[in-house]
Length: 132
Image 1 (cartoon, rainbow, N blue to C red):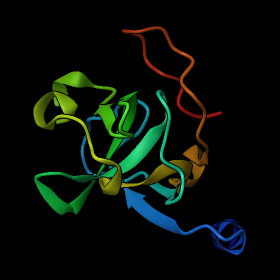
Image 2: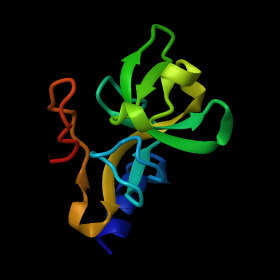
Image 3: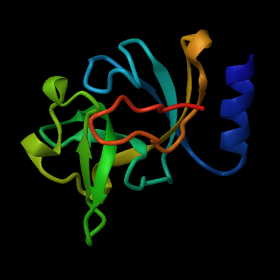
Image 4: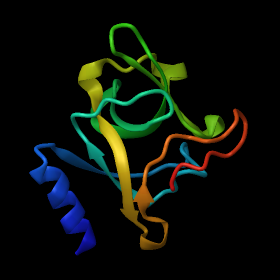
């Protein structure tokens, strides 16, 4: 019920939403396999934000990554929180703006870990605190 209300409130505000599910470990420990989130499609992301992007090698596949940098043309350099488990901009380069599905704003599953996204508050090399 709370999920439907929150998603409905976002949709009513005139924004489109995309549901995203984490499948791999590239964003651990912030996000784990099975985590489900909502991304707002009109939000592109700033450094530190978590975004859903289309894989440039297979655009039907969504990837969840953290924005490392925004290029002058609006392309995003993205990376995983666990570099050893991540395929990201180190592999395929910057993500063009048309492949950005949206900024992830809320995790709704599992219920005990639900919450809004927060900008990272960690030092490089330390585990991020991804949610408040």
